[in-house]
Image (cartoon, rainbow, N blue to C red):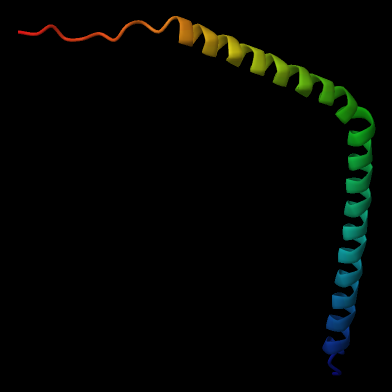
Length: 82
């Protein structure tokens, strides 16, 4: 009985695997591009305002904390002498 052309089969399988990999990579790039555009158009404009607001609140609270800490520092406690 004749042996099948295993080398030809392996080459065809390798070619098909390469084609499938290229197609998957292309689809991934398309999805990433769409997701990036959607983020820039719809999410970043909304989220950017909240991030800026939160940053300002954090800075304001930190300043208040520092002022309170500077004003309310108790005198240092010294141990009584024997």
